[in-house]
Length: 337
Image 1: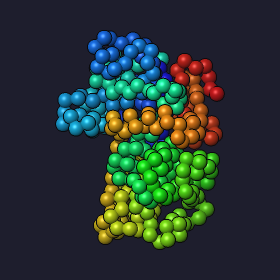
Image 2: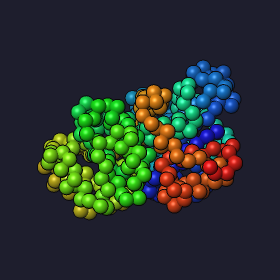
Image 3: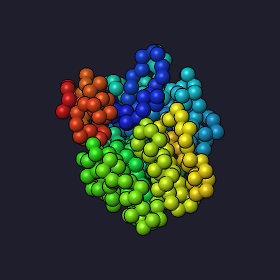
């Protein structure tokens, strides 16, 4: 089994359970054993390298029939105490192996399985989740396409994946904001296709955005700061100077009493919520990884063994190893490297 660590999400987004949980929701592994019907249904065989989505949907409800199983109640751990989702489900629920931070993981009939293309390593395939989010949020949710102008806030694994999705779709201008500690990530952002990067601690980001765009602002703002407070949202609202722009937000904020609703309505801004990815987005993400068009190996910065799980998680959060963007946890590996 193989897994990657949680992205830089605020703690309320983590599983809120009191029983033991095997973490690990961005899972890559080889099929160790598969029944005949499972192998036929999923189009896999023993030994295949696969990417397992963290959703375990019912495939019976309206959302599943629409292909939007990320909204299925059977896998919605926030509202359904009996929900199944890799990395979030209690290990007390048989057959117990509901997370990737382990040598083996159980795949039921309704697991969502993608074959990893030939030539794509397990470590590189590990960024399929942020890559698929980039495709889902930027292209499908916000309609980024040819000649779009985009502001991406936050150069973490999600933000960097958004750059690739927007560049692939034909965006004519990509601006990325970050902080001084993101200097190395800003270099990666430029390498992947960002036209401009802005350190919000060294210059006025709104003034710089307006300078770059000739006062027009951008068409789409993608907030990938995940828990950085209200400042990125307020900047996004102002940066969408053109009417009918789209603002995508993620993370969970308990309160926003000063939300500029009047400005949002006057500018006819559409607000979208970043919530997961679809099957098609995952397939396109894997194809993107296989194409080698972008230097996506730059995102796969660190690997750790199972015994270093705590260090791996803290490193993603900026409190462990330096220079981390995306971390891979290798359960069969001894120690960190």
